[in-house]
Length: 317
Image (tube, rainbow, N blue to C red; front, side, top):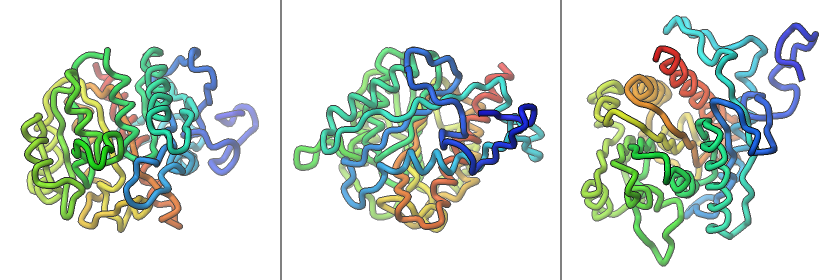
């Protein structure tokens, strides 16, 4: 399928198969040769309220075709930069296999996919699914050296165990903080009536967390917030409920008072300047709650811009 004008095909965004950004689909994970590998993790059995994030990967992929016009890269007149030119190679690995109600095996399958991306040398970008899919993503990095996590989220997700559940979407940051190779977590956007009791906040801070609400973040601004993150390798996990439901209603646990687009975009741009981004996940898009698709479009736009920032900084180095 053509990607330019030279072969006589216009290949508009609404034409063709909806891989992420209409990038090539690589079914054989031993043959990945790319800078970025997109992985779908359509698992939502970790959700405690509204389900539906299992359809997040499919919906975000479809939304991402909006940004797949044939010309190479995306010119930004504010930055005077063309992002994601043809020398940045993105592929789509498809989805990890999910077994309904089986968290342990589904998570193992997600971890296997992320490991395959890492073995190939690509940055894994995993699209959920509920936030529990971050647990296998972080597990996959066990031999990748030490790193810090940036979590953009309305909720702390720092529950240790609730009614025997240790691997649901309320647990991922607690599981991450237990890892020897995770050196701290920046938890930005945490607000209002949250999913974690006071003891969870105390535990998080004791285990190396820096917690900012949206209002605290806005007081210091995205640049200063980014400067709080230690220099070095950073894994970024983005829960779409970090955003205000006025712009991202398609999620299972919406929380008013959230970030707007440029809050997070400018944070990610500054983090890309300061740090080496080693992996990304974006979770909790549940498209059935948003008839307009704006939540999925926001997710796709955010990911593509973030990848643009990462490779623009790498090209400078």
